[in-house]
Length: 278
Image 1 (cartoon, rainbow, N blue to C red):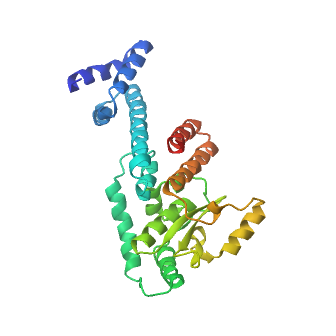
Image 2 (image 1 turned 90 degrees about the vertical axis):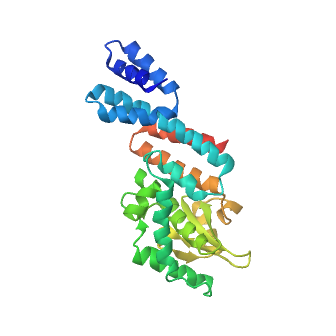
Image 3 (image 1 turned 180 degrees about the horizontal axis):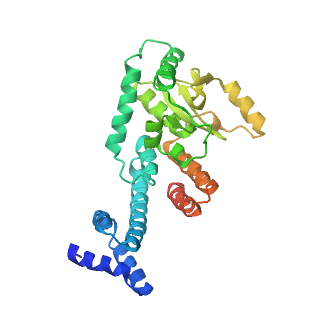
């Protein structure tokens, strides 16, 4: 369908017959995600609030369809790229954010740490440098006052506001640490996401990024699990795969949207979760 035909369809979105409008919407949506740029242009050029609202709804449906396609592709082919998975989650709310621009922002954080980093230091001292730069100099911090805000799970927002939840703060910290050659990985604890520095079974400790990079031991995790009344599992101590990390990010958003009473968005997050649970 050419642009002239699409324009003709859009004009019918203001038809008095609701069946006509619904049929037109379904027709445009059936054309697929390639119509998004055209619809965005039509929205900008329209002065009809009713048409704009319907265009917004169609754009969201198509953008969500595109996100599901991209997340499926990430699951099947690109799971080793954790940052891309977390970026995809952010595109749900911010579909126009660029992955390359996101990487450039993280590159600035990396550069600030790299300037002070020394490869010959002991692991604990290397962690102290990361903590000093990330939490003291750059002032990244836990958003404890508004913990359940969806923005805390959007890594682009966290890089701007410097406030996030355990998942987003850990991803930023981990990406920087791994760029520096440090064996730092995510650990999926109940009610808290943390990191582990694991060179070997004999050289392993844990990092609570939500508490400014506090270093603790396996015994501390034992006490934490015992306090929760849960049986110990290997997953509470060992590195988590990237799919689990992205799923936890999505799970946080489900809770966030449900607390806001936005059950439509919560259901869409559940649809994304189903893709990764496949």
